[in-house]
Length: 275
Length: 280
Image (cartoon, rainbow over all chains, first blue to last red; front, side):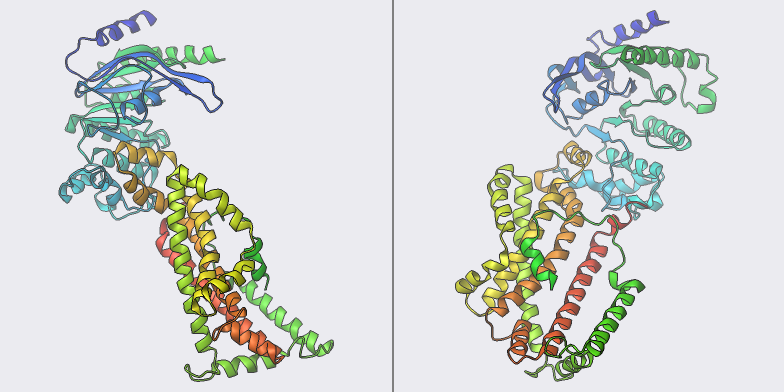
C-alpha cells in the first residue's frame, strides 16, 4: 500500500507541467520562534496544481500545512525555493487569490452584505455593480441574510459568507484553511456538497486544508498527505471517483476505503513518530 | 466626593471594555433601596444625634435649597441654570478637545512604534502626576476665564481616552489583520475598517471615564477662581456657611454626572451594537 503512494507524487512533481497554475518548487520555510529557536516548518515541498484542480492537504497538527497556505496567500515569505502563481513569483497578496479563513473571520460590525463586499471596497479594486454581490449571496443561499449581522448567523451560515467574500473578486484560486473545522458533522457535509457545486460551476482552482480524511476524499481531485514538522509531502493521491459525488455514494465506491485506509495509515505513522 | 481624588491617583491602566453592557445601576431596584436607606440614616442621624445643621443640614433644608435654585426663571442669576450652563459648556468643550487629542495621539502611538516609544513614558509620567495639582498653574497660563476651565477639563479627559484607544487599537485579532493584508488593503483602510471598530468598546470605556473627569476638571478650575459656574455656587454657599446650599449643589452635580454617564452608555449601545450580542 505504501509503495503506491510514491507513484502519483512523481508524476505531478515532474516539474515540467506547463499547465500548472500553482507551482511550489522545493519550498522550505524556517522561522524564528518566540523563544529564539529556529523552527523548520516546511522542508523542500514540491507541488504543482493545475488550473481547475481541487487539491486537499491533510497532515498532523503543526505540520506546516497552514504555513504552505499562508505562503501562497502572500501573507508570509518562504525561505528557499520557488513559488509561482500563473507563472509569476509570489511577492505578496495577489488578486488571483481568495482566502477562506478558519471560523469565517467575518467582521462583527458589518452585516453579511458589507462583509462580502469588503474585498471590493479596499485595495484599490474598481467596484463592480451590486448585482455581483446579489448573485454570490444567492449562490451560497444567503440571499435573505444580507442585512443580518454575523452574530445572528449560525456557524455554517457564517462560513458561507466567508466563502462568498473570498469569491467577491472572482479570483482564479481559492485557498481554504480548515474552513469547516468548527462546524458540526451535518453542517459540514452540507457545506462540502455546496462547495463541490460552487467549484464545478465556477471552475476555480482550490487548495483546501483539512483534518478530516472523509472531507478530503469527498472534495479532492488529489489529496496531499504531509508529514509532521518539518513538513514534507508523503503522498500525492489521485481520487478517481466520478462527480458529482454524494456522501451516500462515495462510501460505497471501491476506491474509498482503500484511500481512507492509506491516508489514515500515513497519518497514524506520523503521530507515532511524535509519541 | 471620592471622585475628586480618583483621577489624580488613578493608575494609567486601561479599563477593559465591558463584555456586555449591564443595566444602568439606577435601573436596579437594589440601587433605590440603597438610596432610601441612605436618606433614612441621614434623617435619623440629624434627629437622634442632634448633629448641628452647619455640619449636616436636615434633608428638608437641602430640598428647600434645591427648590429655590430650580424653581426660578432659567435666566435668573439666583437659579442653578446659568451656572450649570457655564460649567457644562466648558466641560463639554474640554471633553471634545481631550477626546479628540486622546484619539489622535492614541492612534498614532498604536500605528507608529517610534511615536509610542517617544510619547508613552511621558504619558505615564504625566498620568501618575495628580493633575488637579497642576490646576493652579493652568489658571496662571489661561487666566480666570473659560480658558482655564476648558484646559483642565481637556487635560483630565485626555488620558483615559489616550490609554484606552491605544490599547484597543493594538488588541486586534491577527486573523482580521491577515484578512485585510490578503486583500492588499492600505494601512488607513485597515485602521478605519478593522482597527477602529475593534477598539470601539475600549474607547467607549475611556469616554465613560472622560465625561465625568471633564465635569470634575471644570469644577476644580472654578474653585480656583471664576465668575460663573457650579463651582462658584459651591464656594459662595460655603463662604456664608450655607451647608444646605453646598449639599444642594452637590446633588445637582451628582445627577448631572449620572445623566452624562447614561448618555455615553446609550450612545455606546447604539454604536457598538455587535459587542453586546457577540456571545449570543
